Length: 188
Length: 179
Image 1 (cartoon, rainbow over the protein chains, first blue to last red):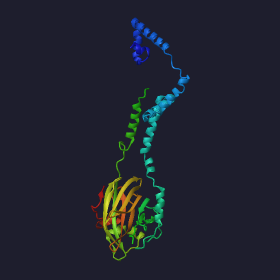
Image 2 (image 1 turned 90 degrees about the horizontal axis):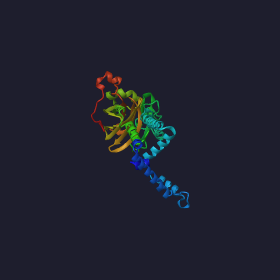
Image 3 (image 1 turned 90 degrees about the vertical axis):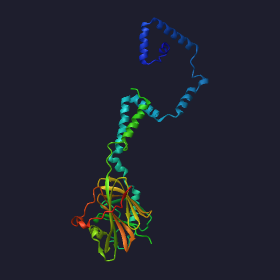
């Protein structure tokens, strides 16, 4: 473990245990001293690469660019984003914020408020139905009311879509009777 | 605080899963909708009004001026939002009614009228709870046929005529099928 201790590769509790032991054990202390001097000598023999030299110019930039191009899993990207937030705001605050945003979005999507908006009729289909309302009133039986009108807020029905291949289809409402009529006469 | 890569994923998946309607325990119970269809034949043959049509007569008089009204059949069924109910209508017609949502006092629904297998008319509408939509026009016997389509979140309300005259109560047919 002394080699790993010298290179600071142990877990914090292991580092503490080894340090405790070294304080009482002369043998291990001398071995560690040997490791240290050996490491120093090796480092002095092998010079560190000089990235500013012309041979290695742009090498580190190229390596970083290549790492950036590697596809990153989505959770890594979220984690990196949160970590950057944690660095500036504190990890607890970032976590709390993320959880709060997800919770608010969930509550909003389940609320009647959102459902109300999702059930809104499409205006273009209302226009289409209004055009249909101007169609001819059926001649058989002569309806008592000859003024075709689209169902409105006073009537009992609010039509958002009306489709038929019958060109003589007519729609009108009778607000006093709270009734809307869709008339589909047989085609000749 | 140590953040493990998997813990954030787990948290988001858990919140999203338990927040969706499929997993939510707070999901409201499906709304029951009662649908009733009266099919009436109307003509100008001076034969008078079928007693079973009389409860509807004030409404019909405001819309049409036929002299003969005859009840062909009366059906009702109950379904719930998202479930289609089918009614077999005389003259080879089929009516599909699918309530979509109950929004306050309005019932959103889709209605499709088929002539055999051919769709004649498709509509999306919101009908007032207990309100009526009349779909009519096709020829039937010596006159024409129309369907009075009603929907409510409770059982069909009795009209004053039905309350005073039990013989005028609607004929319930088992023709309705839910899908």
